[in-house]
Amino acid sequence: MTIDRVLARNFATALLLAFVLTGCSTLSKLNPFGDAPEEEVFDPTAQSAEEIYGHGLDLMQRNSYRAATKQFELVDQTYPYSTWAVNSQLMLGFITYKQSRYTDAIGTLDRFIQLHPSHRDVAYAYYLRALSFYEQIADIKRDQRATQDAIGALTDVINRFPDSAYGRDSKLKIDLARDHLAGKEMEIGRFYQNQKLYTAAITRFQKVVDDYQTTNHVAEALHRLTEIYLALGMTAEAQRTAAVLGYNYPGSPWYQDSYANLAKIGVAPPVAAGATSEQPGMLKRLWQSVF
Image 1: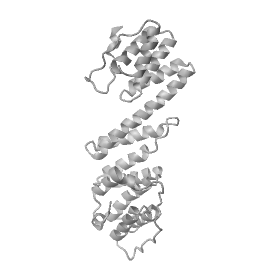
Image 2: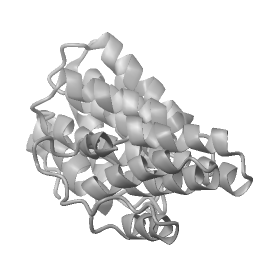
Image 3: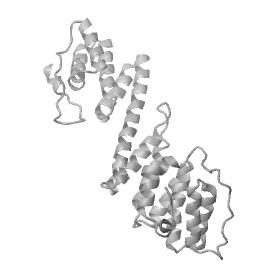
Image 4: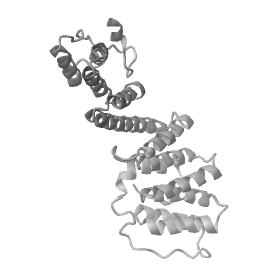
């Protein structure tokens, strides 16, 4: 994407959308400081705010983030009351994010949002802030505080800008983040189950069933609950749980395993016809009434 002088003079939303929603992948994060040679910062007494800002955009387009940062900082410091200074503050947030300096990026974007809450590109600032949390989501074996923070920031984008491209993308990312949290609960639940700490395991698996119904982990959670109830001799609970599993996921291998386990002791639940689309994405418990 070519950033010409027209875009340099007019900080268009199209530029931001191109960078974030389609073009971010083209700006390599493998070498965040770029291979372009460092260029000398313009003398502020000889260059206008627009010229320094435009030079910063040119450097950023060439992935020379460190040199571009100096240009945008120079605009902000030398022409603090200009529109170019405002634009520079937002671009500093973007560059810091591209360098994976997420804590610094969040601080820079928070400052921009506080100083310019009515700016035409404030939605982008909120979205970029949310991405800075989202990209810190760790492996499920580690603490998930960043995942919770990301969900909070993404929810803020949705609530403030529900009909924007940022809001729509944030909804998709929240689904992925929630699936990540459910995966963490499943990992802990399986650990407790293997240690025969059944009460603790039930708590984890039930949390997945109750709180993360739209994720991909619910079928396994119901199967694990069925296994535990059988291990505890709670046959009726195992039947009920397997029935719910069969009703919602009739073709799932988890249901086939649960059904087989119950059939071995002669208490297999009725074969479920499958859930309807009455409430898409919501777990249905209608088969519990069978027992």
